[in-house]
Image 1 (cartoon, rainbow, N blue to C red):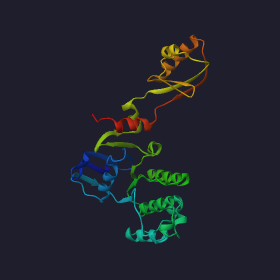
Image 2: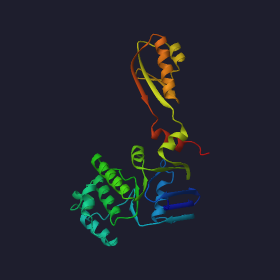
Image 3: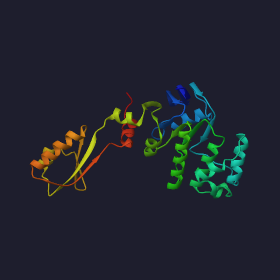
Image 4: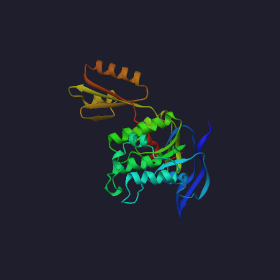
Length: 288
């Protein structure tokens, strides 16, 4: 599969401050790729270099196709109306305004409003429309759902999935890990200007570990010695928590121990590790 974007040994310095330290990754054509990292990791700097808004200190960048960009922080003249902004950007892109797109994104209410009077969510919707004008080959979205209500978020996700079915390439930066898991094929985690992890959401879980959590609510009082014998790791709101790598075997042994002690289970909770937890473990630890 050929690539829409290839980043090779990208370095960005601001004086003595090294923001990007030789990162490299490729975004295959037709995939949705998420660039993740805590604040200050270099996500926005990387996107702005790809967009042509910043120049790298060194390194190589290839972009194969037309770009549509929705920046994390951007603005328009205060008096411009949504319809005027769409017409202006359409002329710039040598295309026509896409009424169907405007309706799908839920930006109809912005058409006659001056920019200064729009809510944050309305502005985000308008900027999304502007980014998608002209049917670009590659769409770059930096925190696209920030400021959107539930309806706006659902509309954006629906549009991204429609573009995915058309084979478009999407590069996404987001703090919303549920959004990332739902939409993306591949993720890269930036930490201290380097790529700390690159792979699918499934491989992220495998890399850090797949330990599950078992929460058990037991009727009656549990003595400290019993807690130790059962291997209780934590206690919260009447539930005793255990962690295990092999869920089936560990749960069977735990239930057997509880039964042997004559204890009665009132409730049982089993949960898999969240993508957010795995992301934080990668993003906050030392890169090896």
